[in-house]
Image (cartoon, rainbow, N blue to C red; front, side, top):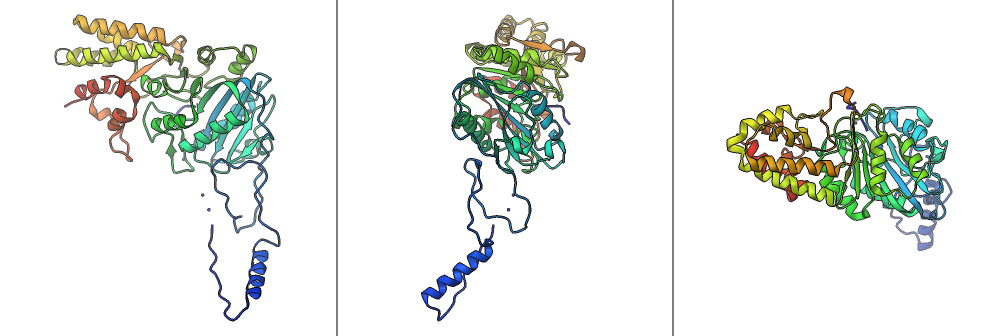
Length: 445
């Protein structure tokens, strides 16, 4: 959410007892089984297991059993909203996990109209808050609740938060046990633009596995759409991110720049939703963006409806005009790139300001008109845009776009060795616009 701040079976050999009768063999086997299990039959633990998780034998080394509280005996009545928060603290953010659950998600917590549910994974940095647990637990947040093992409604053991299956399991579990007419899904973790395999929902215990953008959309294809998607995380208010989520949410809330630990103000969001459970998806996203005015540099809401489609069309037409005018206007584009409002990653540029700066430096009427169309579309598609002017970002307008200066600025990924290919094949904006073609021409030697 936040500022840049890292699993166990056995097999028994069969013994042959030559000359023994069938009855004798059965007796021997029974004795062995009783000895291995301490004289009792092995049964499943009470409470829910993570969906799809295999049941394993008890580890041979003795030790205390984990607390696995029971889930609701039956799903609760359908409410107006369920807020689902996907908290990956299995990394350098571990010390903030319980702070947000105890102080914000449980203040005010759930009520008759709103469910507040979170999955939380902690790692090995050993923050001792709420008992210092390290596994993956699910909480139904109620007023005054603390994130202790006894208050969890499910213990899933150690799960990989960078796996799309964990996201699928959580959303399905929450929808089944805490049904609602509307759903909001919030990602709480590190994140870094659209880049795969970096700090995007990264689980350090699971080898640094990250929940990549294409894995997010694959998970949503499995569980169905939500009304609002939000990031209590850095640098996700980008056209690339929004384009991937267009089929799976009606509205989005995110920050163009880095977000410190305060991030989204859950107390304010849930309080507002409880006061008006008839809020639309866009109103919820607007409220989220409006309340995130702590140490976050920027926050905005983005409509993922026809207004976003209009913005995508504008970006496509702008891309074509820019590419056609590149030979005559390269120096103007370079000057505009330098002047455009940027963020923690130099290649992440404010979309409105990019169009504004280019328009100011070219004479081509077609390019100027395309810039105006982008500017108008950004204003229409970002109803709430909050910028902390003291952080020197006065020209942030709520949504950014990836605009590397040269091919040397392409992110390096040791797993793929070519993240621009990922951009072209896994980011929906590339399929819907000519922006990636412009970037290819722009960054060519």
